[in-house]
Length: 300
Image (tube, rainbow, N blue to C red; front, top):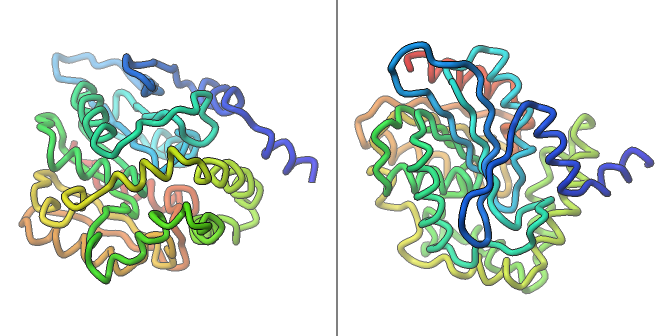
């Protein structure tokens, strides 16, 4: 219980101390509210070639902290990367700055500018971060991008169709559906003893976040035209799509939708499904995910 209390009392200073301890340095970008970048240089380039930069986009309300299990394994496996950049969006879990980017349009614009300036070789995203990474890859010119990695992207596909009714969980949050959302989001992690305490902390933080009026307003700013239907085919780089077969938050049937759209492009893509795994694939199955990413990026 005491250990759980320590987790539940974590603040932004604790999260950032862990990131700094893992070798990341923070950079605050211009703009209000500010986007922050956590950068870690892995090696120096000895040639004139452009640096190989990997950029990671967090899920809805998430913290860069959740990437660390996967990041440590990618580094240990010798990922072909000169610099890692973890994006911290304002107002997320554990964030010191409570203000969030107010609308979907503004978020996409600012994230697109940020990612474009970073000139990634590999762009990775999980959950809503997977959707945002896919959106940027489809809609923003990224000449140096060579690989895209999407982990159970929320995608906003099928938003206005009966099959997309799962999105009602998000847009219905002001009507008292926060607990139902958290049950779905935490189901996989909370069932595993090793992750139970971190899941408890994250659920408490995320619950507070989801009960905010400005978060509800942000969710309701998504509209027709924001969904990825009709845009997945604009992704012009090989893509690795990863999904947990027991994902109840972003249901597994959406994997087949994404897969079909990607295959229709004619580009070489890779797919990984993980039985018995929920929404947090990068945490629940970090070793399997790291192996798949390493194989997928070998040619870079």
